[in-house]
Image (cartoon, rainbow, N blue to C red; front, side):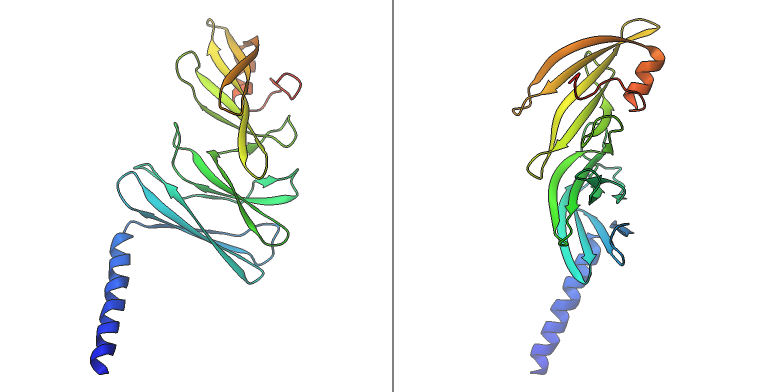
Length: 220
């Protein structure tokens, strides 16, 4: 009996040591959801290799704990939580966890937290902000390629999933003006050009960072 207990204790300690060794470079982050009194979020990222790892997040709401997982990548990854974002016209709190994915390494995995304390996975996108000019839309600026200096993508939630629905690509025409291509994104991911516009350098700069009305639901 004592021998069996000793073996079990040895295996337990070995398992704990192995886990600690595997996650020697673990990052941790904590936060609270503003609209849920006494709520807590605990996230831990554990690298599996130089460019890949696992993120485990535990969400505690009214005594109910929900654990969710996602992947992270980037050799310069930094774990970050976003509890400022909300969905459904601001009525549903959201949670974002950095993943380090994407062209600029700004990927975030998002969840909705419902009034029944359910945590719903709505997918991943570059770090989003509520668009100031288009209702129920979220936008993000990413580095461009080819023709474009940068691109501002617009996302909506459809069937509880983040979907990129439109974009504006910015390119410099000359020293003082920029071109802007307005396009929609088809369900298959294809880009459909709708219109083009010339912007001053100042207006283009404001449009790129989402501080000017350069496009709206009618334009796109």
